[in-house]
Image 1 (cartoon, helix red, strand yellow):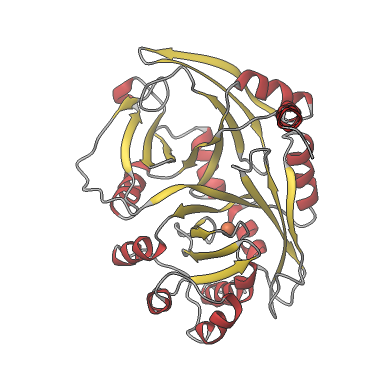
Image 2: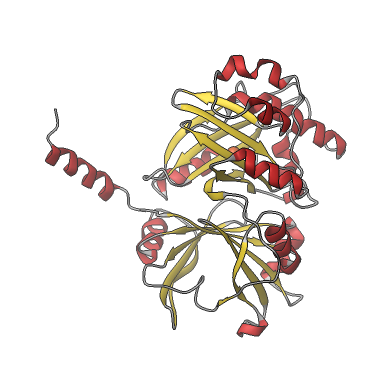
Length: 378
Ligand code: FE2
């Protein structure tokens, strides 16, 4: 039996071994065609509050950025206001999409040095920025496609977002829907690239491989994919990485890669503690979800057993259910949230389960294939 001191020592060693301690997701930044209108959508439909803004009125000459927040989830929506810019290039190539997955760290300089020393492609050397609210340090490295990871050190900062941003409130009536925190962010990468990016997260960022799904787990008649989930030392950050696998027809990952023009963020899973309330509101506000046929519920309870929620409500709202050794989870996926069949959201409630809903893959992928067929992309 370990003594308490030995246990503490082991814990300290583990923490020392984690060369990239991460406190959580700091923010997710989208480059989009019209940030002003997207901000309205996230406020009115998704219940995010506008908390900060940067643009011409605050002395920023080339872009406008809206910072939206709901509990611990922070989205930044950015549009270029000039014709020639990286932002516009990104939008022309990818459509509206995620540019930055920002991670909150205690030391953005060490995060940059540790990761670049291990082979990360640098994007931004550590810079200190100050205003009347304090100081932050930011650095950045590349990940898959044109996506980057920013490291944000904000321990000495009290402002609404970052220096250069001003606190902002809008007149849009906002009713939050109970979204709490980012649960996981999934990346789609090109055929044959999954292991390369898993290795990147392992070697360069010190993540661990959590789960592997192969095409036997995730295939339907037409479409297949492979997926590996990596997670950081604290377990707060989970990045599943998908690649297409050979199927009879074009897989959903291939469709994404074709329309996103390369690798990128496929979906962001946001956690709620009351999925029935969250999804009831989202449906009322016109958010479109993938549909699973009613016969899904003929067998689901045999598979997952008893749950605490009202099963009639679960069925009415078309919410999916799965169970693992530790408990169960409830989840639901939106249709893509822009015209290209690319980024979408997952709403998830965890009741003990720490997995990703493997039991729902088949029903889900058949639903995605129906959507692909509607788009003429199957
Ligand atoms: Fe997911």
